[in-house]
Length: 229
Image 1 (cartoon, rainbow, N blue to C red):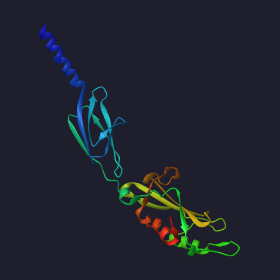
Image 2 (cartoon, rainbow, N blue to C red; image 1 turned 30 degrees about the vertical axis):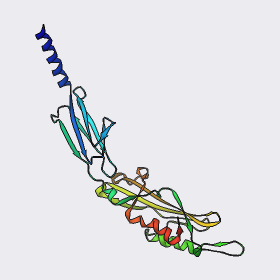
Image 3 (cartoon, rainbow, N blue to C red; image 1 turned 180 degrees about the vertical axis):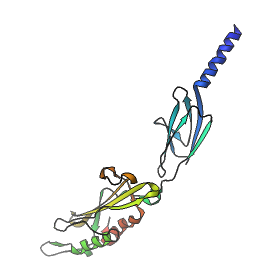
């Protein structure tokens, strides 16, 4: 009887071993998030259970500044530990984060750049010339100029980064406003990104809180030459 019981236990243990196994998963960088079958597991290192009936698990690694990596680990894989290294996203090396993109921010214009006559009429020609100068340091042209309503806008400026498989487009919009009686420009720097292969379609672009490094100085130049944020 004891032999039969021992045999049953052995067979049961063998069945479990065949039905499931554990594998250790590590990733570089060590703070990358690991997802298994769509569910968050851990950062950097985790252990996953592979069930024979499932055939495989889907593992995904995500970390800002790196290209998302997704792979499958099959139950037929005999390794007890696997390691992956994520590839640096080249787009993050040519752009910088900014909290001022894709929304209007205000620049209070220096009183040296406009005058107000006795009747209270304001002459803003010099201020608008200055805003044109700043923008044309970074863009080849200004697409829309409506001085009567106090609005200008550039065309989209496209920059492609094949090594990152991305294209980013940037546009500047400026409108005149009055805050507390002072001349103020409302400035919006629109920044959007799309996969390079799909960048011919407008709907492929999505807003991103980053700006191309070449254009980042434009924000501080608005402040330095026009007034203050």
